[in-house]
Length: 363
Image (tube, rainbow, N blue to C red):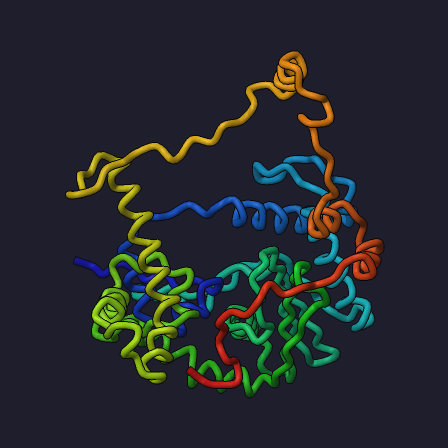
């Protein structure tokens, strides 16, 4: 029986490079449709593509439906910020730049493995001997410009367009409106080729090796949909479950356990979600049952409720309340130029201390 071709998507490169076995395990899992945030992100990318080709302003399309999503002012503003960054590439390079939008780039395609993905924007500036890979990120999770995904796009572009002799510098751009200005990472073509040789190629080979074990880590496990079948996740859960009583833990043991907790919590959440889906489809899990979530009361009709409460003798001032919106809510109502004025009206007060990773140490 022929082995099914393994798909290694560029968008998930940070995961399967950190844990090559995750690609094989994920291939065994059923397809899971993306959530609402992912659908909104896809729609914003499509809107940006449309406006790039039409040379139109995304803000004129507020309220229109793209990819099944009604575009809000924020959605359109994200697309506009992305296009502004893209056109800056042309301006900075005096328009001596070939631009490709939503370009599919195959890095490797064999009977065993398919590696590649679709880049948001590719700028080929031969006069400047520069390649620019720009990617729009609509989520809130911070994305570093030194991105495995973008490096893979860059390599695929160099190969597909036969640019190795024409490009000396590669710039990776992350355009993420939630985090302000465009972030850039610059590297030489040789540095990129070195990364390919020492990091990318070994990861692909290990992904194809059925004997290569899972390598759990925060970056590998956070969005991996194979957590419920991953033996390493089960082993970590066992380590946590068999740990000594809290009072007997040494500082070293505490450090190890804290490092593992994030991965265990993700594993536990994945198992709960999987169990719920199984039981909803008719499976029986000994000791567990489905029951409705706690019901929250709400007014059937607020106008009728108001009239009814006043009729019962309550003072109208008692049954309604007015309060100022939060800074986050206000920020969504303001224009981009108005938002800086919020700083003078707000303050940031910490509610106390919490544990956090020491970024100065290598785990």
